[in-house]
Length: 328
Image 1 (cartoon, helix red, strand yellow):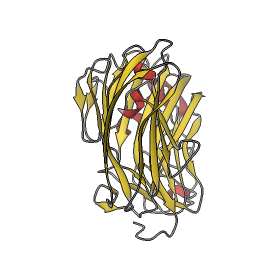
Image 2: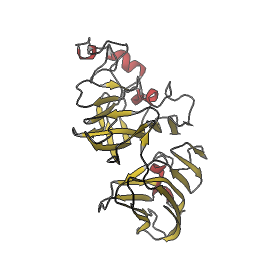
Image 3: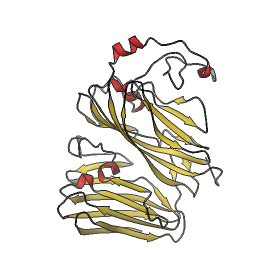
Image 4: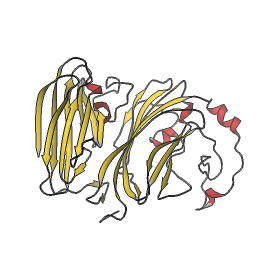
């Protein structure tokens, strides 16, 4: 299946760009590319995907989000052109693409809506394949897998925990991608460990020793912007504002019975780590549940002064009912 079209883009009308009925499931969108939409206001134009007859789209995101770009740069300060296997931004006033696999079993409809008060022109290219499996890394997902988006927009105080994803028991899945925008008076909020609670676990797995470590960097991103297939920093003003992403197609995060991903603004760091503390040592399984000494909070704050920060996150997750056929 293939569709390429150009069309007058009136504001704020929702324009259908593609429709397809699946003949041999599973059917999959394999690439989307929007060369332009506007050009005025192209970065805030909204892409919606209605899966299997939905009246409310399960996938709705801006063209910036399609390419993992942050909300601060508006596509002009990400040191482009650049691209990785899953997504990229290759031109001014557009040039965003995604090869994220979007599965459906019955039908799909895609639309675009301008955010500009003035009419413009859009070009949109979408391709897909029938009878095509979905994989994350080397693992094939069940036919029931569907892509879901999870959002958070929160003002965080020092030491505050915030839940980025909360998927209930009875659902299995695989995390694909996390986009993180943050702004504060300083980068002190980067003292934050990513916690991963899978399958009803009371104690977390730790995915990082700090926020920049989760995005595969170090020292408060002191080398500036970068984009790799595994992670990237797409905006960095050196004062307290940034946009970053982490992909999990080669670093898979699977769960079989519910999931929570929890982040923080700053940390108390001591011992084995638990919900309240970030670890500073390796401990044998089960040790994280043991009472730990009170950390020296003054030392933590000396390294990173308290700061209020705004977090805006978008997490892409493949989800399916627990116990589905061919569950990883």
